Length: 397
Image (cartoon, rainbow, N blue to C red; front, side, top):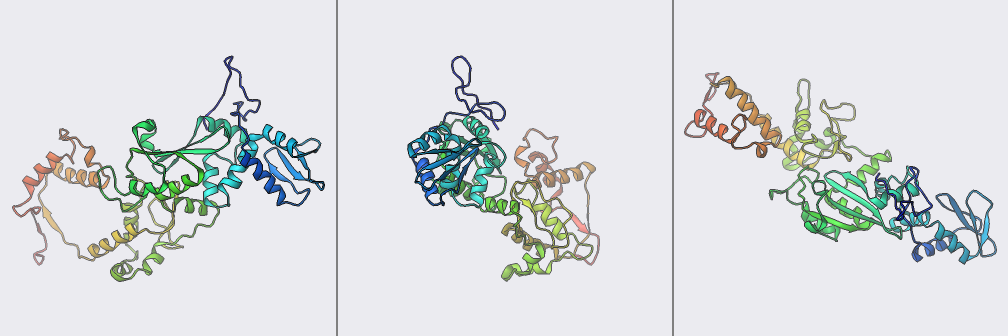
């Protein structure tokens, strides 16, 4: 968390409430809506039943007044005195109001917003001090910055992590969470993004001033279902559908995938997972395996949000590879120098890792350099654009 130390001209903290690390919390006003919400909540409770805040509680008495308990002797008070007491404890009251009334129901949205500021692990004073400076969280390629107003209201700035230090004035600003649908459609080069969790989110935009509910909607629009699945996993309720079960329910043109199994000596599904589910290709962390009893032999990644089943991109790719793998292998004889063999390997690696755009045209030392690749094509391809080689089996055509 960031530190925050409001100070007077003399350098002393102006607030008498401090976080666990000694930093001072910002001064917070008590909004009328928050006080009214406390009264409404007390009306819903039986006399003597406490409404709890961090560090104290309030209850109604049988006479229509109130009782405040903060570790010392309970103090009876009327509504005016209650207002004064809660104003002195505005940080704790606005924190309660923010999550109980503004955010509302227990579920993924509330858990996510509390996670951003570590509300289940830090005190109100510590969090408000950090929020005054801005608490930053990463979610995929997003940078989320949470702040607090002088009324205890949470505000959020959402942008691409690559734009972390860019002024809001230099970015395309948005207010409506649904605007995010257009932002995630294409990558920086204008290519369609079929996988919304691919690490290819374009930048140049910002949602500079979102409330809690709009923040959740924006994040879920950019990365659909990621917060919901993250929350299910935290609650021990993530329902995982493994490869075999997913493939068994395919039909139509995708039904061919059901014929492709991991039988003894085959590593087809490992190859699929290695190709599609690496961190470089998808920000999710793969939790599905071959089946409930059989793990895959490749790593599932380190993403913060889990992948609970093979996605449509994986299924579509597997369908194509199923057809390609049905071909019988042939042995060919090619003439390549050792350097040309290494160059072919370098080209495949560069394409597979998406590094071709990083290779400078003048860097002919790099095997996947465009000019070197063109030279190899000019030397080894025939007039019909085929790699010159012949099958070693005379029965093959």
